[in-house]
Length: 415
Image 1 (cartoon, helix red, strand yellow):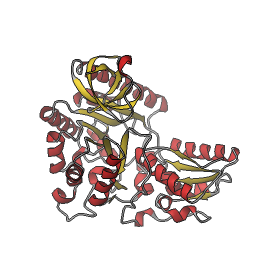
Image 2: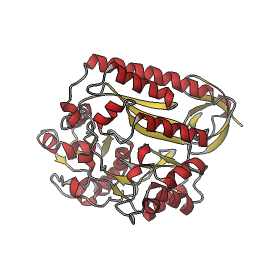
Image 3: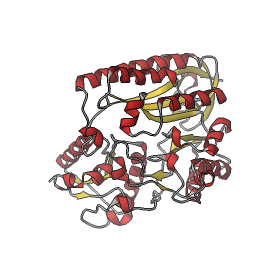
Image 4: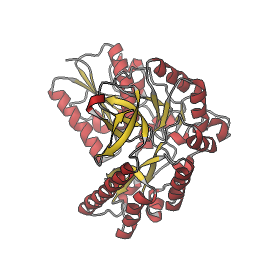
């Protein structure tokens, strides 16, 4: 059997998985499964353990890496099915795949972001570029800073060069990704956020890669957005009118207990300001259902946030206590109630999406084809193209006139 990499969790982990696969192939690894695991919840750890056991039953050598390996190294090194464990930093170095034994360093001592070894992204219509890793915040539900370390930024020149290479490979859209991308810059800048923040990086990409048609941001923390970035979000047509916000809740007391850095009013005001300045702007968000101590009234505030912020794309997460976090020690909500609240959030999100889709009818949109007959508009709406116009290749941009929707995606024909 050949080398296999199984990625779990966030987009950054999947992107790193591409580099892990390239490094392991270059080292000549055979009959090996690399579990690039996530640690965000107890369930994520269970999935990594399960994948390791299955790979061993299939006769593979098993390497476990990723945040799961970094935060729970002892668990995986103790598993008889696991042959080696590599930390999040070690997995990005070629030497780790050319020698035996486990290697898990202290990620909190890392002071620089390791540039990802280039790996092809030919299978993706939208290319992804890492701009930073790690997080300086300590939200009470999150273990990820201990899996990724403190925030570390990739230098502007490196990011621009990677974007240029991807455009030369034919990519029409690039998505900037990381753990907390709005914290970009201070560790490599001059102290002035206007000269070192995410806005400075975005300006550098757009100026340095003039042939790039579309640049998109992954999840951001709205309270950290710098003035340069805010100005470009409003006025720069090549920066896509879609932001995914790390909101997590819509009640001030729950936000405080989460140790988030914004209030409900600030989140609503931010969305309303951008909608007024750029009417085609669309928002997505993460919302946690059933955070410890959440009352019905507190939950209703989160439920109402979906309409108040006009959230078109909502990721709902039923709260799952992650061992080792402060939230796991707080008074928990009954699991059945957590599940019920998550279902109510999803129902509200679906109704909001349908309302938003109906407002797009009659518009002509630039759509990036992702697979035959389907793509993403600039505002991130999924678009189904009439069967008579399904011949466009993945990664191409086409203008589509919207004539309806099916509740999940827009329907249209090539102009």
